[in-house]
Image (cartoon, rainbow, N blue to C red; front, side, top):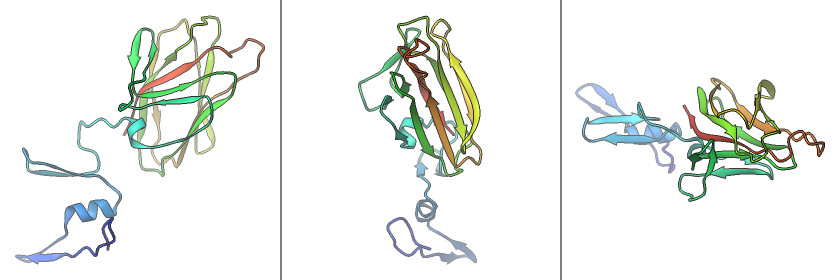
Length: 185
């Protein structure tokens, strides 16, 4: 095999056991490789207890009207008085969506879903599609507190988060929703 730089991975034999360079193998598999010097442990992929924010892990295709809040950015949004500097917001007079290619590599996504709205009369939906099939539609009411949600994505190739706009008839146009501190495992 070859590592991520295209160099040949050379195994070696010591005392009758064949060894492979861990970093080269991990990177060839597309996984992050970490060394914990305190415990003298190598981790391939995510360390136990490590949190991976989705905004930092996987870049989506997004359409106009969706904002992405990254940890390295000073921008944040708030829901029920709590500030979130990692996550996504949906809204405006347009159907907004994010499309993620998960490639079957993750098991679940979790975060806090709520309203960023100043108009307490209008709800807005979040439709969750797994591989093109509607998994769940959640109606976000600005009068309710944000709620923690978990989306099972084991084996899912593509995730779509969509917030439809139903027209200027007053159903949801001025309501914005947020999906904050989204963690992917």
